[in-house]
Length: 49
Image 1 (cartoon, rainbow, N blue to C red):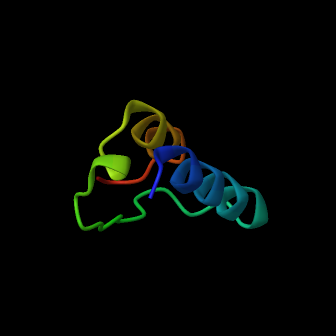
Image 2 (spheres, one colour; image 1 turned 90 degrees about the horizontal axis):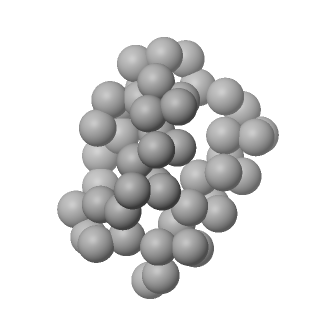
């Protein structure tokens, strides 16, 4: 699965409903979830990685 697909899905989810600070994110640690773009979106949403 390409990183761009994961980033787009996360962007759409954040637009639909912004999470409360402290959201805990769990992934299978695949490469697409370790990219800087994905991590930046989560940091901006104040999520815990």
